Length: 139
Image 1 (cartoon, rainbow, N blue to C red):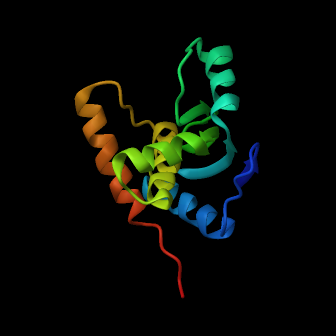
Image 2 (cartoon, helix red, strand yellow; image 1 turned 120 degrees about the horizontal axis):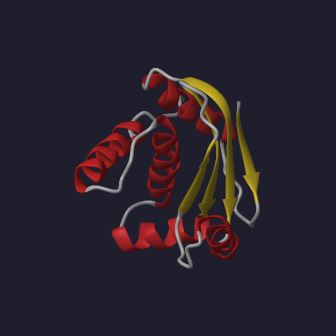
């Protein structure tokens, strides 16, 4: 099950479309959907989590807590919508595209993709682009 929670003024529109997309990302990697909770929050909220759980005193756009069991993908994905907005502006991309990049990034981490080494980062970016293209809404 894929659920969305809001700890700021941001509200995700078309939740069913996003849940379907996230589910398709997971199954496209030959995994099973477990419990995925997206928590959309402020910079301040995510900074507090970063300090408390990771001992990092920096702003970030996403923190993922991994509860994966084998190929069943589960986790809590915290996203700062303020960072997503700032990144979209900095990289000159549409906010919705940047949001999808970050949302897919969290899922890709849970599936097992890393981004610490240059080769891992390259693969992660390719996978993000691939997964963003999977988002579509039937009219």
